[in-house]
Image (cartoon, rainbow, N blue to C red; front, side, top):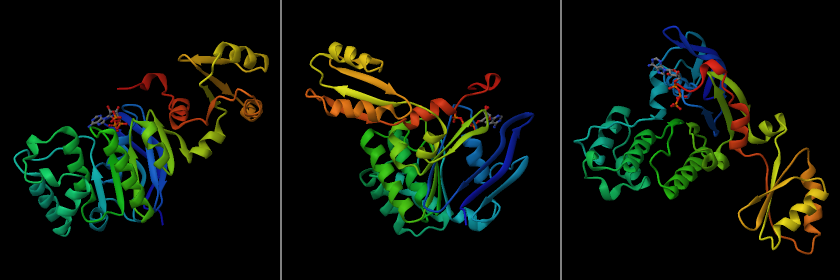
Length: 304
Ligand SMILES: Nc1ncnc2c1ncn2[C@@H]1O[C@H](COP(=O)(O)OP(=O)(O)OP(=O)(O)O)[C@@H](O)[C@H]1O
């Protein structure tokens, strides 16, 4: 059974339709990256899964039930885009409060504070927390009661690079234990290795969904080859041009070549057999490249 199932869902605020005929699912043990421009409809989609907004048409099911079902709420964790807490409560009091609301065991409070690296600040009032600390507390709150489904809206906002990587590794562990995760982020490179599938929204419509390999097969985007540590980049540029490859200089001693239709294999053969073999980096189209290709906003609906 899918943890989340959206079938032909549409949603309007007043007369403005912001989600159009959206069908999407999330299986157990999957991390689905939900991507799109500002105003694409990511948060609205999450709110429908949470039962905070009802679709105008179509169906939303969570664990096979309607989202407002009490059992659904108990097994769901949510980190909103803007985390808000009572400023006068300490981190520990905040988490204890949410633990009571969610029926989570008390020992989870200390464990989760430890997990998100806030033990040292547990007794401090939340109003003295930095942005990243509030975000960590928000994550701890979302993880109370061991949810089977996690909805994370921009979870890495305010986190430093190490904390961001730790968060993704932790989400990966949860995924391996069967938790399903939907996460929205505008920072694509960091999340790329961790998502099972990407769903790309633009103007409230699903433009593409699939694993990165599936999305790559749908479009003919170039493979990037970067040649570094070249003693004479201009010499190499001319040589590559003779072989029919356009390249551009990157910094003092590197070149980048964009190859199409599998031509990177031919180029790699040539380069590997060269006596001056340089540092080589081969990159298939990235999540960022795919996003730029698919997230095309219909003109009248551009970013709000
Ligand atoms: N309460 C509301 N009332 C009216 N319109 C709204 C409301 N909330 C969102 N919208 C509109 O719905 C559309 C989708 O907004 P939503 O917040 O879902 O986008 P998003 O993809 O999460 O954007 P962002 O990346 O900026 O967070 C936007 O056009 C937005 O202006």
